[in-house]
Every structure is written in structure tokens, then in C-alpha cells.
Image 1: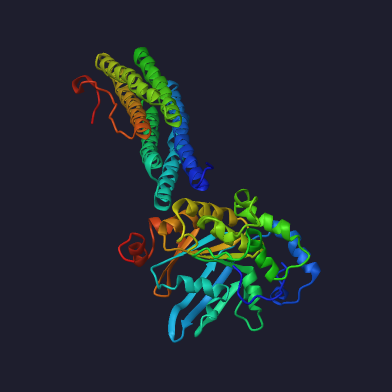
Image 2: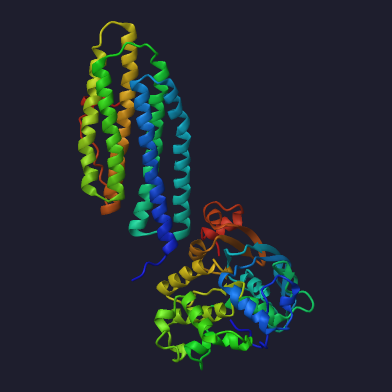
Length: 232
Length: 290
């Protein structure tokens, strides 16, 4: 049977591409934000902040596109689930973009010649690599409708959470030097932003499961609250 | 659709007033033939249209622009004047005893209501498809499509090629190519409607009016017609009257809402269905009245 409602199908596919393309923008922002932290690059950090407009713009485009298809095409079944998921995903994209901005805004605050702690910096960089790979994995899981790949994100996210706690612990014990302590506090905030990025990828994973199975299951981490460093 | 009292006419594609006259030459027919492949639709502008049935004013001071190569949907409750508007565009309204229209309906700046305008030429340039598929009952599939060409007396054209091309354009070719000599009424409802669209397309109009073209069809046949509308707009300007708001949503670039003979709101379809300006439009599209 030939494909009917061709332009509608095309619009749906385009909208998905546009939303998932938002995750590519996040990957770029994340790369730059992490580089600006590692090298204390204030200019690069400024670019992350400025470029967030593109991510916000993408949010508006996808939001409008979803509304338009809902209003005009009366999507049902898997189409409806996809559109609901895209609305959710683009919100995650926008939030992750904001987390990159949060990281970038900490760069000038933490000072040019701040004393650094190698352990913390290593952990931040490792967290960053994890967060980045989670973003791309969330994208792949959604575009290939791969439930296993999506569920694997929960396992991956546990590592980010572990590093987040480790950074917190290390910062608490960092010693008496005021400057070092101040820097470490900023790094806690960077770690928290990365932890939030990880959480957003898990949210996307839940949407993958929802699109494929029609069931909504919170697959996110089961870490006991007392153990997790997750300010509200 | 073929106007009932058609006589021998042919028109040129140039933008001069000549195309409204009935003097046809073989050369003009050929010119039309050769340029027909890449013919584009032309916009229709309605200004201050008032349409009457006897003393009753059915369409009140109606002005709208139907842009070229776009699909415009007219929506509104029964009796809001949608069908009357489209019937005024190709001057079919005046065929009803006691009915008349005032105002201007311009195709490419030419007012079809001007004195001396040949009504048949108007209807050749502005084709119409009706609610109920109406193939000529005694004619074969082929003759149904050829009917319009024969009635308009188009000579010097390859009839067979034109008919085949029209059937392909409406996606009917593969379904009927082995039964071209069988009665058109032997086709399914959806096929019959596409046959009627082929008959309209065969005379290569500039504007196609559709008055509830899918209301007698099942959902799958409806979707096929909607797909077809989407393809046809590359070459024609399309105005579609529909009771089905979802259909307007699916096919129309812009949508106009009518109520009690008046145009309430006309805008991009997405805008009309997500955030209309007028409270009455909002109430109609959300199903709060109608």
C-alpha cells in the first residue's frame, strides 16, 4: 500500500529531525562549556551564553510545529505519542542548553588564576565526557526507537551521579585555603549542572520507551535520596 | 465540471482581455497546449461581493484574496454562504432562478462580472468539482474525461494524450488504464470523484473550486483526494468548501471562516486552528457552536 498523507508524514519526520537536531546543538554547547572550564576560557564561555539563543529558538520552532500538527492533522496512536514525546524532548533540550549556560557563567566568576585541584578537575572532565555521550546516546536511542539503548542510559547516569557525589565530598575536604575552597564551590555548581544534563537524558530515555511501548515508566535512578547530592 | 450550456470556445493563456472573448484560433489552441505543462494558477480577488437568492442576501459585502497556487478552505456552519461564494466565482450562482450577484470577482485582475465577459470561458478557466461524484452515466471512463475538451471544442490537440495525462494527474491511470472504454459509473465513489477531477483538470483551468468534494466518500478515498489536492496546487489555485474542519486543517494553506454570509476571519490555517483572532472563529473551531 502506498504511503498516504505524504506531506503530513514528511512534516512529522522533519519535526523529529528538528527536535533531535536540538540535541546536537546541546552537544556543541556542552563541548564549549567544558572546554571553557578546563582552560578558564572566558571568551569561549561568553559564546556559549550567546549561542543559547539558537537553542531557545529551536525550542520555539519545535513547540510551534507540534502545535500546528496537533491542530491540523489530528494525529493518533504512535504519531500522537511521538508528538507528545517531541514536546517533552524539546523542553529537555532547552533545559540542557540552560545548564550549559550555567556552567559558562561560572567561568569568569571562578577567577583567572584560581588554584585548582587536580582530582576535582579530572572528575569534572570525566563527568563532562559522560554527559556528552549520554546526550548522543539519547539522540540515537530516540531516532532508532531502541528501548535497550534508552534503558542503558540509566546505568550510565549512575556514573555521573557517583562522580557528582565524589566531587562534593572532595570539595568539602579540600582544606583551609580560601581561594581553593571558593573555586571548589564553583566546581560543585558545575558538577550539579552536568548532573542535571544527565538527568535530562534519562528523561528522554523514558520518552523513547513511551513512544515504543505506549507505557510510561519512570526509569530514572533508584539512588536513595540520602546518598544523592541533588539539591531540589 | 462542465457547464451545461457550453459552446465552442477556446482561450489563450496570455493575460490580455482577449482570453475572455470567444474567437479561437488554431494557433492559440496550440500555444495553450504547449504552455500548459508548466501552467501556474492565478489568484482570485473578490471585492465587495453581495449575492442574493431573490430578496434574501446570502453573502454580505464579502472581500477576500485567494492567492495563486495555494489551497484556501472556506469553513462555517450550514447556511453561512460558503457554497454561494464559490458558485459566484465561476458565475454558477446566477443559474439559479432569482439569484444574482453584485461586486467584483477578479481572476488576474479581470472582473468576471464585467459586461461582455463570456460566461463559458469563465467556467473553462475556473473549474468546479461537486459534493457528489457526477460522471456522465452513459459515458465511458475515457469519454467522461474527454467530455470537457470536446464540449469546449478544443481542436488541434491530442485528445488521447490529454485524457491520459489528466488521468495520471489525478492518480487514476493505473486503476483505470485497462477499462477506459467501460462506463465511468462502474468505478468506486472515490474513483468517480477523481474521474470528475480529471475531467476538470483536462481542460486545464487556472482555478479549481471544490464544493465539499469528499463528503460522499469514505476515509481512505477522502485521504486520496486530499493528497491529490496537495499535488494539484502546484499548478492550480484551489478553493475548497468543507464542513469538515479537520479536512481544512489537513489540506489548506489558509482558512477563511464564514458566518451568516459574512467573512469573519481569514488567515494561515495553523493560526486559525491554534489561535484565531475572532471569538466567533474560536467558538466554531472548538465546536462550541455550529
